[in-house]
Length: 114
Image (cartoon, rainbow, N blue to C red; front, side, top):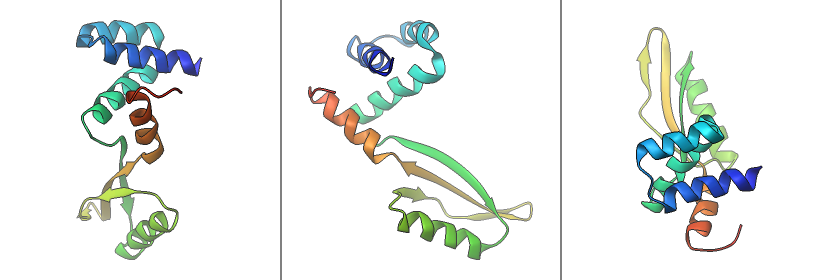
């Protein structure tokens, strides 16, 4: 099944499908699965990195900084915005870079095999 999903994602990209054609393909295969894959392939083809956006709330700046340090220790690549205070909490928004996914898509776009 995974290879079919990957094939569908790359076909949508390679056929340069319109948004409507991609939507039809997504509905057939499963919008939640395929749409994000097609978007990731397009982003990587444009030289961007695949990432997940996160927004977390912390009671203290100390815990927020400990969280950031822990991600770094774990080798997680992330891009952090400046934290801000809202409704009694410190808010941290960040993008977790999906390095392996970006590398795999780049590898496939260069014509290499799965």
